[in-house]
Image: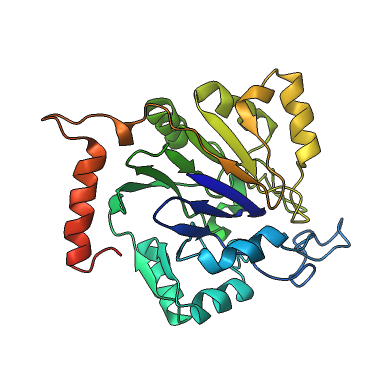
Length: 289
């Protein structure tokens, strides 16, 4: 498995079987509104898409959306909608988002169960919480996704979230091999942070035994932690070996360690093989590609 960081929360997951585009914000630089109105003079996104995206986009055959309503253009903007619709990209999402995407002409496929079959394994929806306090009812909270595939490292995409008790319990129990974490500490002019803050980043590292891939930085005007800030924070807490901070356009090869997707299941067959058989059955019924 490989992950290519595109920009902000947008990335591509690559395996032998697919290229999945996650949360596509594909607008040109400065084409989208500001998210801080009083202390920012820059429109979003702050940077262009990297050339790597233009090299890889023709290989993308699926998409995955964590959340996209209530104006969350940084996870699906008009350019992203147009691209998914134009290329008829099968787009996995929550049941909450499926109808919304289908009305835009996107071939959305709802993940109807908390844990669903997914290619040669499973995908589990982990509730995300975008903030605390008075902003909470105005935000679209979405989900994160825990992906376990046969003979691949396990991967947890946190989505847009702060560190909640549900996520603490999940990470402590499941111990994903890799976690893609929103370390940008996004924050409007008023209200609490919308993503992991400094204390939560450090706590996440204390809960996890895997590697943490940091994203959601240096592309939106309301993100308060930059890559440089994060690197300094990790030095101060002796955590540089626990994190990967990719640049936009950078591809990371993920190492396979012993994870639930590659362990042997009772009866001699691997859990991955059981999942493969289930996926084949569902594919024949039109449930999954």
